[in-house]
Image (cartoon, rainbow, N blue to C red; front, side):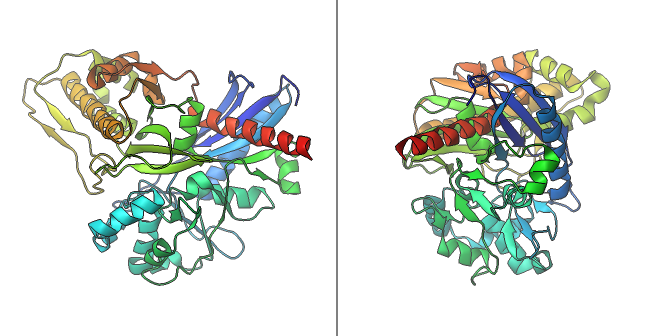
Length: 452
């Protein structure tokens, strides 16, 4: 591989896509981004159109590759966790992607006893929650069977994209598979009890994607490779946005914590094997080999600040000005519980609601913004405390995501957590993690060829 070759990472997030070109040393050379909607057609619903996201991804990929003047070593893919998408016999979507943010499956949560939840979490590493594809599928089977009509294959955004772009068929990487709540982490095969629960206590009548390691190389469809101008670029399946953010941020040692706040928020550490016993419902996803990513994710990150700005836009020029003013303001006697969109960690209640307490006539728009910002920040800190209890105290927090653009917010997080906070050196950690999976795949390929 030429020493000046670039490594590409395609990060398909909740509401936007980014494709980045990195040097072998991790320097970001170029990037492209594009948005797509997260739709809420009914109360509790949070869905997306797979074709729309695919079109955005292809446009960004084509544009970036055409602009590069240096050779490309390969492309890795990062996608969000917990999505459910059904495909028909031709591989076409039968409906929208039901995303992690969809809380309608709360309807079946009573079917899971505390003992059953604990048993499933121990084996699969995924908390039993409406975010989980396990719970989504049970809800569809028992209460919304029309959503399953015509479905032959169980997929998500990643396996759909892979099926559209490659000759490999419906394939899913281990990182995303371990976030379905239906994969046994020890055997890395689909869990029979979880599948029966997903099928309404009957065998799940959907074909499942084949699970492969994140450094698996895929084969472009000839027509797709030609159309996108990527025929000669190795394509690596990659992983999930959360796990790859840890990898991209260099979070591989005890005491190092990754904190990302974008639309949502997440606190993650990397460890080997199972975590220490804990009463907290933390996720424990596969990364690669014996490495796993332990942590908790919040529904209520930057999206709460965006909602607040829409209410207060007459008082601030933009959301950045509001956040900076709130972060620098003095505390007041207002408090805010930030559960506008239900919650995963730390309370695991999809029906939780937000509340603003202590509001009186003397409070200003900045006071309200301050209370909201503290509510979001302290919620993240509570997740951090749970992660520390399950692993070890944080020596340093590596921060990434849109919130790092506000220096005052980063400083506030350090004050509220009592921990050293550094902005991650890689501005697009998930995309860089995907690019690192390319390096890993190509190095393994070289080793294999050498031994042969």
